[in-house]
Image (tube, rainbow, N blue to C red; front, side, top):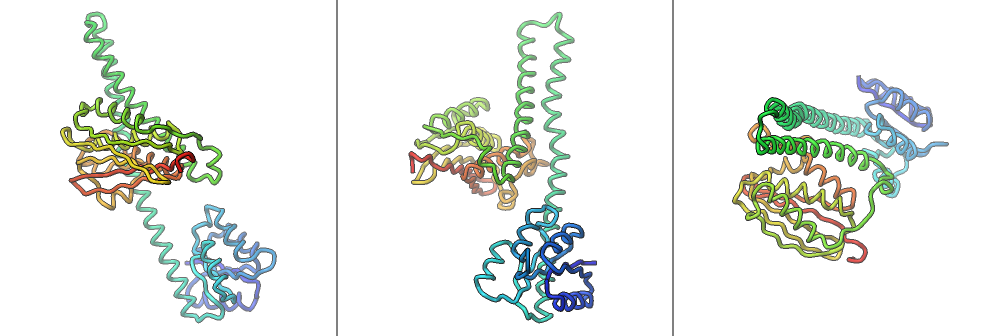
Length: 367
């Protein structure tokens, strides 16, 4: 049964609302003040809350703010029901995060419609969240074992081979096996480091005091850094001839390592998901507030839905393609830019091209 919590210091209002809700098939629980309402909400976690604003000790705004600080109660649909009809009061209530604002006296139809609307929206939100969580679980279960197993298999196989032929192997054969072990170790190391970095970034994004934990610094002459990264990654894939670089300089309000990580992930992604012989265009421009780095490739591209769902552990269309990587690169770049007040913009035409734009804020000397 759907439970509605009513918080109001007027006993007659509480009784009327309780009777009305029970007639309509809801389970109604009531609190005679804000503090009692918060306690009931935390104990019973109702499906929706009707709350007065003008109450002694703890008013409705304080109730809403308190419930928003608790993960258990933060997403409960919250409806103000008050006699205060001023525009300022309505605006304040909605600005602070209330889901609706009803003015007393309201009709039964208005009240029930507001409750039904907010419950339906909340149900849709929970359904979407559950779907995303299931997709995440599926993506983890499908991709993680493969991603860890691939480099580990190469390392173990090569090590076993080396042990078996150690007495008779030539230096060239030993070198070849050692290089295979080294390559697998580097892939595994990068994968683990990316997972650890992503977890750290997720925690920082949820921390209101994250500004104190962020590394400080600026990046001067980013064109040299970006050029070095692009050439190094292209060389690793034997695609130097595909590079087209056109960069300018500015001072970025972002530390060197963070800029390097963002650019590395975006260029690596462009190389990974485009065919050899197709161009990779890396360019930049800046205005009075931001430095834009555009990385364009002519690969398989992404749909709007895929762009909207960029996140960790997701490698789109993995069932059709076998490129290494679990989709952490774009997620890490996005979160790093967000933490430093930048932006990741992706525009793509499926099966034609993709442009990933990293927007970095300028340092004070460039404003």
